[in-house]
Image (cartoon, rainbow, N blue to C red; front, top):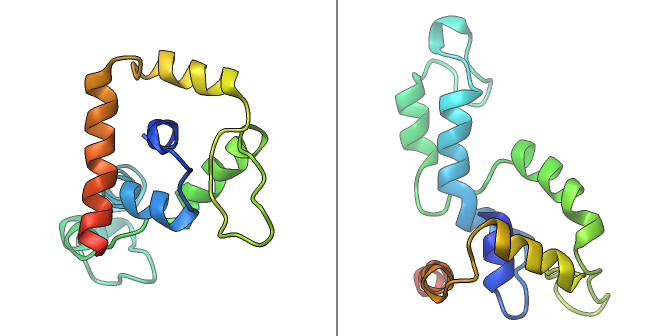
Length: 130
C-alpha cells in the first residue's frame, strides 16, 4: 500500500502522512501477528491488556504505523526515493520512472479505477485532517 500511495501522489507524501494513512492497517497487522497474548507477556506500553483491548486503543483514526514497521520499510525504499530539498518539508516520491512503472505493473495501478480509489483514500485523509 505504501508504494501504491506514493505512486498516485502527485508531489509525494511526507513520512507522517504515509504513516497515518497506513497506520490503522499496520497496527492491526502488528497486533494480530507480532504482539504476544496476555499470558505470554504483554508489551511494556500496554500492560494488563488483551490483544483486543490493544487493538481498540491503537485503531483510532490518528494511529500511526509503528516505527518498528516503518523504519525497515523506509530503509529498504531509500535507494528508490528522491532526496528531499533541504529547504522544503521532506516528501517521499520515486526517484526513477522505471521503478514507478514497476510499482504500477506489480500492484495493478495501470487501471484508472485503481488509481481513483487510491486518490480517494488520500483525499479522505486530507479531508479528515482539515
